[in-house]
View 1 (cartoon, rainbow, N blue to C red):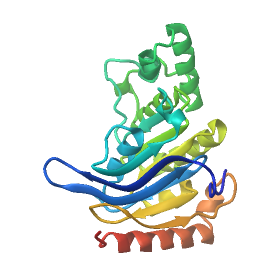
View 2: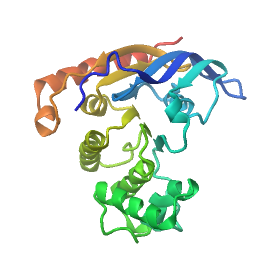
View 3: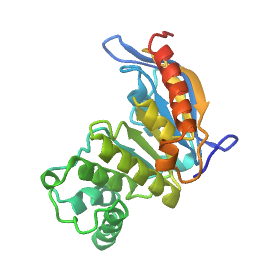
View 4: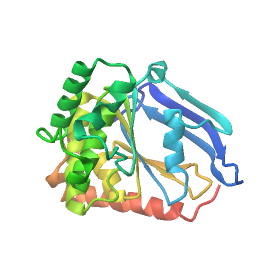
Amino acid sequence: MKQNAEGRAALVRMRDVALAWGNGVTALDGLTLDVRAGEFLAILGPSGCGKSTALRLMAGLLAPTRGQVRRDGGLTAAGRVGFVFQDPTLTPWSRALANVRLPLDLAGVARAEANERAAAMLALVGLAGFERAWPHELSGGMRMRVSIARALATHPDLLLMDEPFAALDEFTRARLNDDLLALRDQLGFTVAFVTHSSWESVYLADRIVIMSARPGRVLDEIGVTAPPGRGAAFRASPAYASQCAAVLALAAAASGAVA
């Protein structure tokens, strides 16, 4: 696992970003943040602090009210950014293969090639043999695997993940954490991952940013020290527990902070 992305080029640069909704609520104010090439960035903060909004700004799905969001030129090409939402958002009338194939269909990839690539992605997330399964036939964890496969089908440089494992049981969540790290090592994409869990953030990330209560901005950040590969031994280690405690303390302080 890449331990430190310090000094690497930024795929996304956010400078003094604010976003106000039409109802007068300001979601973000003064958010300055880089997503560095090759890193696994976790974004942690209290509910309603604008974490999900920040991801949508990174993806280009929203425009800031103030400030700048600059993306590396390659990210503006179709398919270079993948997005995994908290809900798998699968189309219930399509089988698993067709759900994964969707972004390839939208990109105009020939059907035979798209089917081959979608099947390969399903195999990569551990769902070989489930190509013809309907979403309602799959468990919550399996549906999330399909969602991840769909996001990776275009081979993105940047994968944005909005609390993708929050609704899953503890054991499924831990297994998917391990699978995500393995996929990231194998495919080499950069990750920006929103979570409420200090434990999950330390297990997954190279760097963790702590956001304030709404309107959101970055209050602090911490680098994670972990062995290559991570796994059960890291989860059981004093180093993991101490880093989780440090992140939890920062997050608790942030929950009462205002801009």
